[in-house]
Figure (cartoon, rainbow, N blue to C red):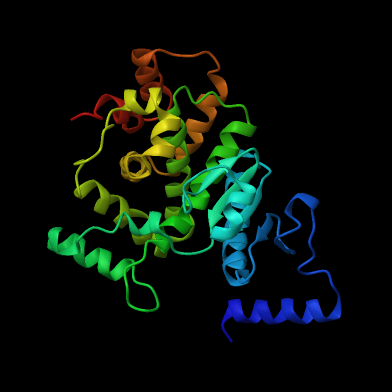
Length: 300
């Protein structure tokens, strides 16, 4: 029997024996269902138990992996929301954009316009990349869907829980995002290697599509207009994220898992703000040259 179906069966039996499985737990989430049995607290919109199980198991694995590496574990609640529930639990205007807010990790429960907006005309891309996209992001109906990529972004959002709750000074807004992508890529490369194509092909696709129509492309732009770009120009913001995803892959390939450990320890140590030359030197000396190169070579 399929493992997920087996777990659903066990949960269903438990539900029949007691009212404990899908208890409407915390009052603030009394319109959602609660998934019991995991370290991660998970609440979800109706009809999404299978998705909740998959994400809960992955979140627990991430926490266990990084607890061994850095001896730290943040606290958060995972909300898996359909379009009707989205506005009830978050003020973020773009349905489908995973985000972390005040110890809440919020992800979409289903495919949406935002995800689809990143699907380019495959026939306009280089042949190899077009084939990778078609092989990696196909749903059960045979259509292209970016769900496999956006599901992994829940791990990115956990990265924000780590650096916010641990009180790290990540120095720049863009560095906070890169930190999360290094955390994401390191976990996938070390623990779910079969998911690496889902994580890496999407950024390649977005970067290859170019910046036509984007108003903002520099690190200075994201530093000065972070909220505006994220909320009013989601595709433009997605391009920045894809650049950071690509950089995180290069960083892992060059420095391995030790790079994240050094990054964690470096930001934990350095509480005073650094100017750009100081930050580049700090990253080069205490973490890895590949991390410093993100800011040094961004416009090349």
